[in-house]
Image 1 (cartoon, rainbow, N blue to C red):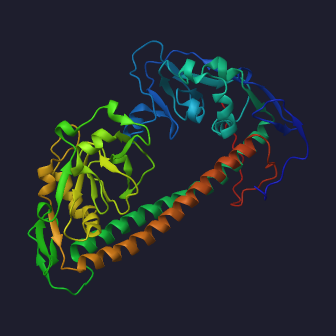
Image 2 (image 1 turned 135 degrees about the vertical axis):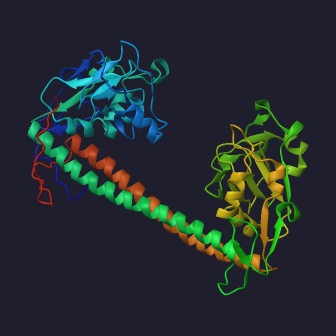
Image 3 (image 1 turned 180 degrees about the horizontal axis):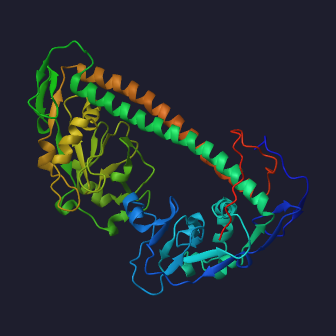
Length: 454
C-alpha cells in the first residue's frame, strides 16, 4: 500500500469499524441510507438466490453452478419479495461474507432482506464496502450467533454506521477498485490455470511412468486391457491379491462413538480426511480406544502400508505411509494394503495413475454411496516391472512429483498473497485510508461510471 497516499486531513468517526475518516466524509446509520424493501413478488419474477461466490443470481443458474453455500427455497408464497437490479440482499450467509449485490430483477424468499437506497449513492461503491473485511466484522458484531442463528435483520443492519460523501468520489473509488481488483483477479486466474496445468502434467507423468516405464525404446506388448494399451514386453501383468494382502475394518471390528477417545488414551484412527490429494496428512486427528485398537492387529498401520478409501465421496483416493510415528489403525471406510512384494511407492503411484483410477470407477458396487468390495480390490490388474526397475521408477517419480508440487505450492502461496492484497486494498479504500481522487486509469479509459442506484 506504500505507493498510495492518504487524505490530507482526517477526523475521528467515533465508529469502531471505520476509525478515522477523511475530514469531508460523513456517516449515517444504515437505516438512513438503505430502506427495507417489502414489495410482494411479481407473478413474472424469476426466483433469485444469494451466495458469497456469485452474488444474487437466478436460482436455476445457481443450481447449475453447484454452489453449496447458498440457501434455496421454493417460490409459491405471497411473502416472497421483489428485487430490483442494484438492490442489496441480506442472507443467512451475510454473517460470514457480507451483503450481496443483485444484478438481476426477480424475487427472493422471506428468509432474505432486500435493501434499496434512500439517498443518491453509487451502488458499486457500496458493493465493495459491504464485502470489505471491516464491514463484515461490524456486521457480525450486531448479532448473537447462538441466539439468532447467525441471521442478520434489517434492524441490526440499520444500526451500523456507514460512510457517506460526494457521489463523484464514490464513483471514483469504485472505478479504481474495479480496475485494481480486475488486475489482481487476472493474475490469480493465471496462477490457478498454472496449477491446473501442473496437476495435469503431474498426472500424465505418473500415468506414463507406471504403465510405459522410463525407457522409450523398450519393446512393447498388448496388455489385453482396452484402457491400458501397450505395456513394456518384459513386465508381468497380475492381480493385486498375488502381490499384497488387503484388510479392512469389517464386522465385529467396527466401533461406535463411545470408542472415540481423547489424545493419549488410544491410537490414531485414519479416515479419508487423512489423505489430501495423494499425500498422507495428520491435520485431522481422531483417536480410538486401546481396546478397539488391539482387538484388530491385522489393521494396525505400519510403514510402507498403503491406505485406500473404499467407500464414500472420496472413494478411490490412496496414499502410502512412509513414516509412522505413533500407533495407527483405520476406520471402516478404509482398506489397508500390506505386505507388498514390489516397491510400495511404485504401487502407490500406480494406484494414482489414470489406469487404476479407471479400474476403481468401474468397481463401484454402491447404489448410492460409492463403494468397492475387498474382492474388487483384490482383482485390480497390476503391472510388475523387473526387480529393481520398480524402485528406479518410484525414485524418478519422487523427484518429478516433488518438483511439480514445489511449483504448485509457490503458485498457491502467490494466490494467497494476492487475495490478501485484494482484501486489504478494498478495506483501505472504502474506509478512506487511501486517497484515489486523482487516480487516472492507465488504460486511458477512465470514463467515470454514472450508474446510480435506483
